[in-house]
Length: 395
Image (cartoon, rainbow, N blue to C red):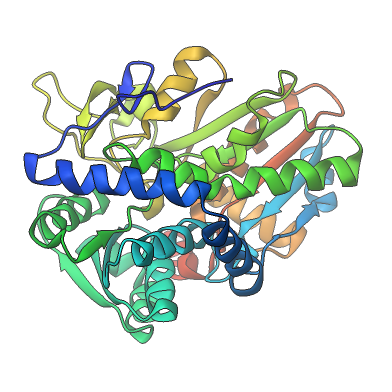
């Protein structure tokens, strides 16, 4: 299945490049560098060696036998991105973009972060490659992800608080883009999800597709057949695209992306773009956006900082339109319930982001065919969320 991008950076009607004129040349430079590095055996060899020896790939595939007993009727495996260096899938993309930045001669990297995992991963790669690093983060996210703020600073990064707007991921991206407009000659913007202007959605997807390539081979080796169903959470959509993409041509494999349902769609306090949004432009790309009738971006809510964003990656909008991926929601309460269930049955503290995928699966399991083979992407670990979970219980 060909999803794009095409020559215009589009995935069907979605995607593209909606940016100020000053960013057109840096984006063109980035597109050409990405194309060159994909063909460069030396770049690919260093990327693969770094993923193996520094990140710890391949990450394991774990059979969740006790979780199966609780949900019944289905078989469940977990792709363990929580066991990658820095504790989440974000490092796959930052290693690739860090090497790409060095290949382009950039000595400084900047990033935005919501849950902090992308910021930690960017700071980690900057330290390894000897680059200066600044990470923009909304003040609300800094408060609920304090351990990751400390980790970024220990790694030598400058963490820049963002106090404008909703003080979350959307506003952090705004400030990072302003920095990049000013310093694009010396600075590479390490965008953390499959979002933004072309070529970023394709770059992030390509670096994250290592998840699906490994999972496909590991599942075949362990089970002897492909899974019936893939499940992953969807904020911007990098971990889910990384899992889904290598399976797109496998017609028998169903795919479900799970958005943040917050306090419920009816409450208006959620981050479910496909349930409550419409097509529009945000941060350089045309996709599904939570907006009002005048095109003003609506506020979002999720217990998970990493899913608390008003737009979704343009390739997800295309895959939904094609009917290849189905998008569902899980509420804050369902994610918290799944967090505790996984901890007590499998001994794993999952991040609240993939807990949404498990929360949907817990609700949907009684309706799945008996014996269905399910593969869930566990995109990050939950150490960063322990205080948030305890606060919810005490509220």
